Image (cartoon, rainbow, N blue to C red; front, side):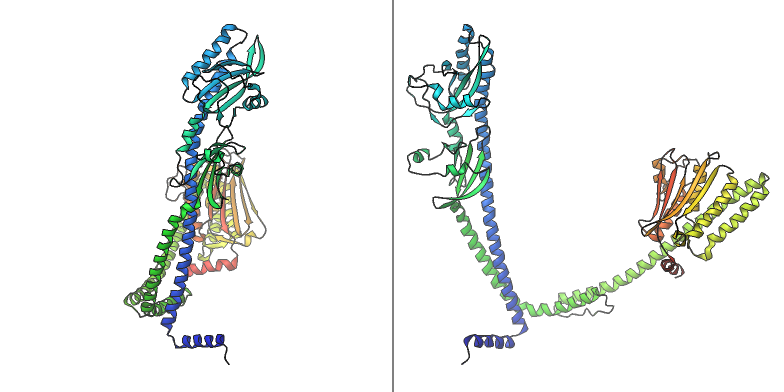
Length: 612
């Protein structure tokens, strides 16, 4: 007998064989979309929940920050009263002076009248607990021993700080109106002067607790469903909206645990209820503001959001089923064909069929892509040809500038020598000039070896030494192997010309020019250095700026040599190759030629391009 699991698999297999591709694709896409939307909806729901909690925490923190600011201002005002009483009254009095002793109660009375809304009483006690002055009440209760009170002992033990007590009924002085006021005591150790001798005492300021209560009781958290309470550093309640119920044992609060929380938001479970707790420490006192918001307050919004997500998911599922069944086959087949054609084009295939058929938009798109590809290929070919022709034309123009420029300067030197009767030297110069131009021609190629380029430079130096007799010396140093590398021709001579005309013009036998060729990794470097007067920074920038004006430091030349060499190198090899000038006034000049290290095999490619 066939097992049920095998029978079920067989039915699914048979159903799969009978189903069309359109149905399979539609159901598959619908199932995937439904799962994705459910996951997305769940993720958004969880994200919204987290955002709601974070927003509630942020709101609680803002509220607590405002309450903390108000409470801090309130406490600062009372601390100001204490500081005024101490530093402006007590410290200036000598209690042995009867007039001074009489002025102390009056000063305390004045301070009380100034801040009577916030203060219940001010009092000064000696180190043994004796009352020295008080305002507005001055009669101690018989049953009270100040030196044994907590506010007194705390102030005497920790003498450098202000000390705040927990709320309590004012029980020090006899009140003729028989009022029982809740106060928070601010006490501090003070220094009393008696006959020039310093002794300890305690200044007590009883602040009205109703001020603190007023700041806290009207605070609303999370739509009035949360509440705020105030505790000291040990967790004892200072204010709570249900303080009487807590003291009566009818309600509990997690205040002892809250005392150990650091500032910020926390989640706790208390009394079987999860709630969000936000803590903010009040400066100077060590007190903590604690805001409590039950998490069940958030679920009202969650329920509405969940219904909205269910509606969106259900509607989307219906829409997806309808669209997939009706349009999947009509759109999918031609789009896949078009996609395959594009991938073939990306793979570099020359002939690609973009005729995908299908809906009008897909067919039109396929024809547009085919037309665009054809146009782009023609444009790219035209651009490549135009750029190559432009590059060759620019190189030809630059090359044509060098030879006449140098020839003019050399012939000018020959004329000068002939006119001065130096015929033999003129013949030597013309011989060197012939050898110079033999290398310059280099069979029509713009590439020569670095050895030929430096030989070319050597002939040029021979010519110029004849003209500038005894004015400078020159050295050429080549690193082994570098002379076999290749470069474009006539790049060293213009730099030597500049070094001689502007660097050696004022030399008197002590001029030095050095040429050094070496390798740096995959690059070849040729440096031309002179010990001439150097150039300012602005002239260096002008020399290498194409088309810009050049104010020569020596009054000669137009900068054509520098620009010519720099442009030819960059047109031939591109960035970052070219010239770098290192020069400062009175510090000489070094011109650095940066080239790729081309051997004979590599330069054949460039020569082939020249002939094409």
